[in-house]
Amino acid sequence: MCGLVGIVSSKPVNREIYDALTLLQHRGQDASGIVTWDEHGLHARKSNGLIRDVFHQRHMNLLTGNVGMGHVRYPTAGSSNLSEAQPFYVNSPFGICLAHNGNLTNYDQLAKSLMIEDRRHLNTKSDSEVILNVFAHELQKRLDGEITAKSIFGAIEAVHERCSGGYAVIIMIIGFGIVAFRDPNGIRPLILGKRKSDTGEDYIVASESVALDVTHFDIDRDILPGEGLIIENNGKIQNKICSQKNSYSPCIFEFVYFARPDSIIDKLSVYKARLRMGEELASKILSERPNHDIDVVIPIPDTSRTAASQVAYNLGVKYREGFIKNRYVGRTFIMPGQEERNDSVRRKLNPIDLEFRGKNVLLVDDSIVRGTTSKQIIKLARDAGAKKVYFASAAPPVKYPNVYGIDMAAASELIASKKTVDQIKEEIGADWLFYQDLKALIRAVSHDNSDITGFDTSCFSGEYITNDVSPEYLKKIESIRNDQAKQKKEADMPQDSHISKADRIASL
Image 1: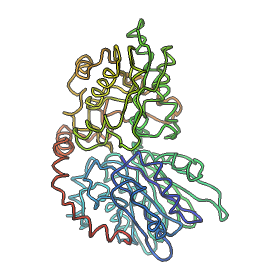
Image 2: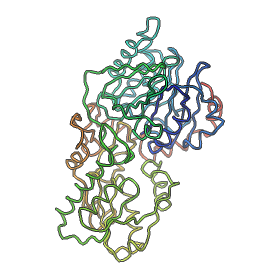
Image 3: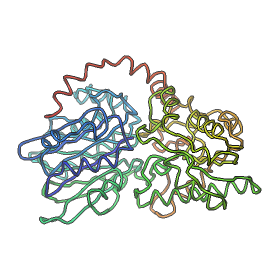
Image 4: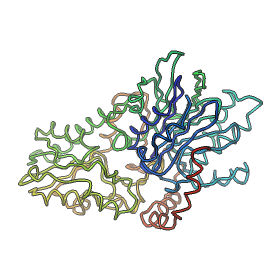
């Protein structure tokens, strides 16, 4: 999962890109990057770390220009190596920078064809670099002198034909403008915003609408599945549907966990979706335990707060904040390695004993992935004096890996992959365990947009919308994504190999 932003403006964009990325930081905490362009050329800065750590005033002063793009990353494909920090750049044709959110499911085939047939060299294992080179190669084939909208849309059409998976892409073509497109299923989000300026209109493209709020852009619309969008440096905008095999099937896990509650994605309020998740979950609890003895509902901060408050309201019991979150510990979901996740839980959450002591407590979380974090949280509640600890997940059991851009563990590490609900209840130490039903989750999320034909629910249902995810592919990504493999990759990575690359980052 990553966060993207691209801006074409009548004024310098460096500060606005920085501000937008800070509001997208939840989408990636591994690396950050900004690229801008003006008449003097390309200006770039990227490095491992959070936005606030990567960019200082001396860097911002160098990022001049009224056109630019930014990226925050956490790695799903590839590694945490600085060489895979984005935006990526190729110098032909014209000079192209790319930022990407998602995963390609046919990476191996594409990487091979790029090197053997297209004669393009790849420097990393990142599928983002593959998309960049596919686009650059296809654009080069269609050029007849000056770059045109026809050649760009033709290149996007070729990307859709060659690339399979979930992807949202922002590209900056040096001297021309910003290009954006979204995979034919609309799995990964991308939204367009605009505002009035003295010379016409400024435009922004971003992963979530919160990036528009901080930069004072108004929501125009979502980029449609399979759509290509061109925003030239002069503000001229063009669009075209570049795929004939489109469906409108956004990733439902965006609404469960990843997106900020104050975001609008595909015309759907994340906040309202989570409220309705709470309503649906409360109905399930009442149907299974009509005579429950729950004294208080307590959320696992932060993502589950909205759903938990509605659960409490519909159950007619108290809602309380029972855990205080340390804001300086990252999201445990995306931490590399189980030991690191285990250690972080106690550092991240501290219980308020008086909210637990002598009470029957219902803990509400957005989801249960590996189960070890849930187990630790339940233990914290018992140690704080809870009489009984019930646990509810606002999402259905996570049984399958997500292959479209969310690093959701290997199948063997998912607690629900081989265990029943009763077995999971025993494993995590809960007195009762409630899961959201998948149909209820879909009802909760899809309430306000009739254009959506379905959702990517693959991590719950095992149904992969691209129809190219085989058992062999899942076995392969499991060997790459399991904790043991990740720890070995990090251990084998030469720590000093980044220095020379980092020194060259200020100017591509």
